Image (cartoon, rainbow, N blue to C red; front, top):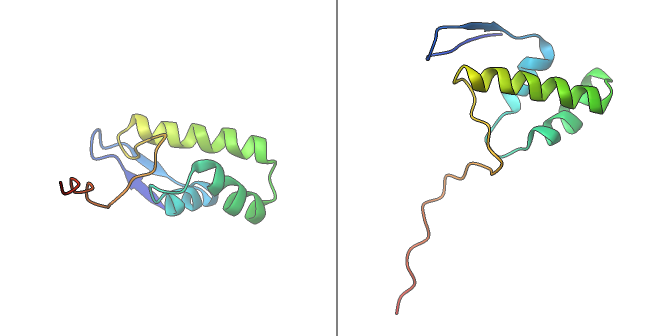
Length: 85
């Protein structure tokens, strides 16, 4: 898979692991869950090493404006309406 940054036109050619991370990055699933539930079982890799590699990959994409890194999940729900008085 190939992706391109709209910010600086940098191309990234993704290997199988990076493609799996890209496809699983839904804005709600923590990267640690993607590593433990998708990458480790599929590729039989050490969880600690996979986690470090995944963080580096995500940070690289974030620096090019391709992914946004957040401590909180993205929510699509509208703001709660004010309570009736």
